[in-house]
Structure formats: C-alpha cells, structure tokens
Image (cartoon, rainbow, N blue to C red):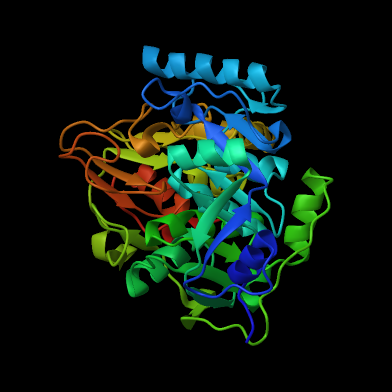
Length: 419
C-alpha cells in the first residue's frame, strides 16, 4: 500500500520505511523560523543552546516598523538572540524584510522533502514547495530550535485534483473559497494538490492555496513537485533536495476534482471562512469603507500587478481607503520596477510597508466601529481586523481592487473585460 506526499516525508524524516494515518512520529526539522511575536516579553525566555544556527531564520513581520514599545522591545530581544548565536538568515527591518512566509518563497528556505516549522498558523504556506510546513506553539518552536526535532501525528490526506485554466479575473483565492465553501474544515487531515491544472498556476497562485489551508484547519498542505517548482527553488537555494511524489497506490481519505475553468469570483461573508462563500453577485452592491490587499496569502507580485491592471486609469471611490501591503521588500521593489505601485498610487491607493499589518488587526489599517472591509487577507473572524462591530468580507485581490473603484462589492470581470 502506497503513501501520500505527507506520509512519505514523515517516513523519510523519521527514519521509518512507512508511515500511515494515526502514527505518531518524531522527525528531524530542517528549518525553524522565529518572528517578532516569539520575542515578546510575555513569550521569550533566555536560551543557552540551539541545535544548529544554520537552520534558524529570524524575521520581524507582524508589527513592522514597531508601532508600540512592546513591539520594539521584542525586536531588541530578537536582535540580541541573532547576535548571541550568529544567526545568518536574519531579516531585520529594512532591505530584506517581509512576512515570514513570503520570505520562504523569496529566498528558497523551504526545500522539497524537508520539514519547516514556525509558530505562525499560516506556516503551511511553505507546503507549496513540496515540503511539510506547519505552525506550532511557541514552546514547540523553542524545543525544535534547541533539539532539532519535533513530533507529529500523521493524519489522513484529502487530494484535490486541479484541472483546467482559471478564467480572467478569477484567481486561486476564488479556488480556495470554492473548496472551503463546499467541503468545510479539514481538521486533523492533510491536503494534497495535484492534477493537470497545476501547470497553469504560478508559484504565487499555488502559495495562496497552501497558505489558506490553515483556514481549513488542515495539518499540512502540499503540492506535487513539477519543473516550475524545482526551477523556483533551485534559482534561490543551491542546496540539494529530492522532490517527493505520491505513490500511484497512495490511500486518500478522499480525492476531489476542482475544474478551475468553471470557477467564478467568490466572496466569504463576515465572521467565517469555511462553509460561508457566495458568488460575488450575491453580495454585489454592499458598501465598503476599506479595501485591503496584502498578507502572506495575497501580497505577492502577481496579486499587486493584477490589482494595478484593474485600477489603471481610474480612481478609488470617495470614502474608500484602498490599502495595499506588499508581502516583502523584494515584492515591493519588483512591483515598483514593474510600474504597478505607481499605477496604484495614481489611482489613490495607499501603499504600506511590508508587514502582516492589518491582517491580524495589528496596525496600518485597523477597522473602526461598524466599518465594512473587503480584504484579500487570510481571515475574516469577528474583530480580526479591528473593532468587533466591524464586518470583514474576504475575496480575491481582483475583487478587492474593483470594489475599491466603486465603493461597493463589485465583480472584477466588469473591469478586466475592458482591457
């Protein structure tokens, strides 16, 4: 009986010949990422030893630049930790800073077949690179840094076979909202993406699907390795790796097909992501106060350039704050070079520095009482982005950009069809 991608990696990293659902295994960890929240005074404790400084990444992303004294103190503690252990892969505020999950993509930190840990829940984003990546608790991160290992219980795997090509103005975020809307949560299970439709998705688009898998409560989210993925990683990291494919006779909890070619723009209604999606036409006309593009799921170059294409030559509606937050300084520089940032600025958007920012209600776009936001970020729970009385609708960057122009939730196809 064969194994899925997750099962094969767990077996390889635990030294076992086979791993099956229900097994508890101890595995070696290849990459441990610590970010600014880990260094907050309420979380941080002095560490005397780490297993391998070359396997540690430190980045500041949730509150950058520091908006409070507490956030600033966390960054001071983080810099001291980096100096203490000679951490080379350090992303301080400045040139190479960004959201940790975007930095994984920018710098090739997630190698196919490896295990990567961080204590942010959207760490599963890195699974786009054919590895096992998971968010774990703060104590588990410290243990992994000190011991170089962690443990997992292997869950069953649901495989999504992607076919077809996304229509114009329909994105991977819409594909996720389709999956979340129909199938609900995937608690204790892994998600595996494959199929002929993968070839038509950019790495950034695929990363949206793995990042958003956290909202399905999935344990791991993985993609099959193909030439595009191997080329992406090899161009950014010279280390050797061995891609992992599922066995032909792998056993799945379910195999589900998603035809990308028939998808339409979707919107998740406020307060829940799963089992809460509707076609954009159902909520079209809903007045918004803020339109937000960013986060580890949708702050990529693809997302920002798509938004710029929609708003080019047009103006943001009066009374709407359109905030665009690149996921990293590298993405910021690339979108400046491509002209996308200039186009967005000309339309009336505000460009924020690379940070998690308003996605988690930290800063740079927090909502006030009774405000309505349409966001392309990762979560829309009550109070997630600010005041508990505010409402957060979730959609693709295309839908967010189109809605920023009209001041109400709008089908993006109305604008892209004109270009």
